[in-house]
Length: 212
Image (cartoon, rainbow, N blue to C red; front, top):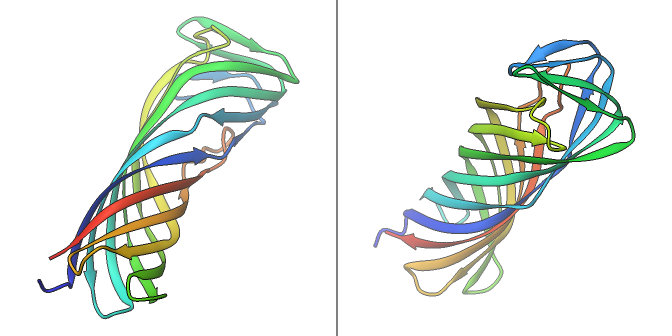
């Protein structure tokens, strides 16, 4: 075993932050026509992640990693502070200010992040790690209904710049295998002018990692 290369597989959860909506001018985005002066935020349910990890260890402290992930989570609702209309497929949804509407929709994504990882021994079996990287997220964004109406429905695919910071611990079972448990802060440059801000989320996962 060279112990320079390692591969891991894991699962976890993602907790998306709310995404602000700010439509100052009327326009059409993803096939939906919006009136002006709509404000509010999208809320999401927690979702799941399936992750893979490929790494190369330069020395006892520094590694370079590629993290691959599949993520899926659902929309929860939209909270409007400034109301307006949205029209799709000839159907118009009218949102009232200071009102929340349930959403039937979801986001699924494949991401790839590249970056260095630093780890520091706590004892013979336990390490503290900190890592950061950049890459991309390729995702499908679908809304079927809002408040029971299809006036704000769309299904679009995007690929955007992504970044991630993570920290956690490695626990070694043997020289060949260890468990990695991490917290991550995730960023996707998904903001659309005159529509929504960028996407951020917190994630928690555990991976079983093998040296080879």
